[in-house]
Structure formats: C-alpha cells, structure tokens
Length: 221
Image (cartoon, rainbow, N blue to C red; front, side, top):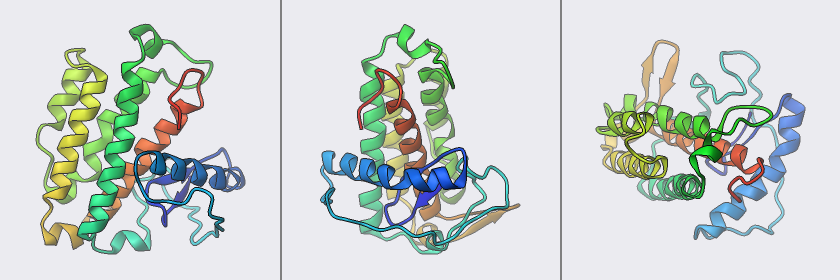
C-alpha cells in the first residue's frame, strides 16, 4: 500500500511494491478528480512527481492499512483548518458510498463477485472499523456502535448508517481538545494521534470506494 501523505486520504495498492507504486499516479489523479467534483479547489491537470519517502518492509498488516504504521507527519498537531478540510473529504467519501448503496437492491449488494467480498460485506466492513481509528485519542465516539449494530440487524438501511456514522465521527473529531489534537497515545505496539486517526479514516473510505468502483455497476469516481 502506498500512502500519499501530501494528499491526505489517497492510497494506492497492488500485489507487489512495484505494482502499488505504478498504480500511484492514476490513484492520485482519481482522488484529485473526486475532490474537485466535491467542491475542493484542486487542479486536476497540474503535473506532479512522486518519490518514495519511506519504504516499510517489516511489521504486521503491511499492505492492508496497518494500524502499527506511524509516519512523521502523523506526529504533528492537527490544526483547525486542516481538520475542517479533512472532515469535508471524509463526508464526501462517506456520502459517495451511501449514495451508491441507495441505488443497489439487496440482491445487488449480496451478489457474490468472481473475486473478493460482496458489496454489502465491504460496506459493513467500512462501518465496523471506523470509530476505532479515533476512539483511543478521543476517549470513544458515542452512538457509533449502536448504529453499526442496527445496520447489521437490518434495522437501519446501509446508506443511512453510513451517513449517521459520518456525522457522529465528524462531530467527535471537531470537538477534540487542544491536547487531543496534539497528543500521542501509545498502547502496546500501537502509537496513535488524531492526525493519524483521521488519515486512516480517509484512506479506508477511499480504498473501499475505489475497490467498489472497479466492479461492474460500481460507484463512479
């Protein structure tokens, strides 16, 4: 997995390091197009270059959004303007997933693809892990677990659950104290910061929105 830290939330992945790196320019362009389509002031035609700032080859869950990875920018305090921008991206990503889910029948969501999980499984996965990225820093995010449980039981439509959790998480992050915005929490082998948690929120939604977009009938990005 390639983490594009200068374009927070953008990742590219592939079965090998070389293939993930080769996929990065197209992923960056797709992410920029998505941001522009959702109101962000970005130039999708401006040339750019990439370089490998850090190559991590040891650790658990490498290539799968490892919770153990802490990059140098993750240690920096999260400023107010940055948080507002990132949460706007998060809302857009989650909204795109929700809007697409609304267009799908139960049969569509549960149809088994040639490879990988069903669309419903992917969306439930997105719902199920989201609060864990920021909860340790914020001391929990009230209400998210109840919404996820209701969606798992079929008591709440997936699209509504996606939107509700986006709102809850955004509100919790916006309410972070100065100490929470700048602090580093270490539990076992995992170091966490608010900036890292928001980065993973964005990366995770983008990863699975892109995954679904590559399927027939998937969301357009």
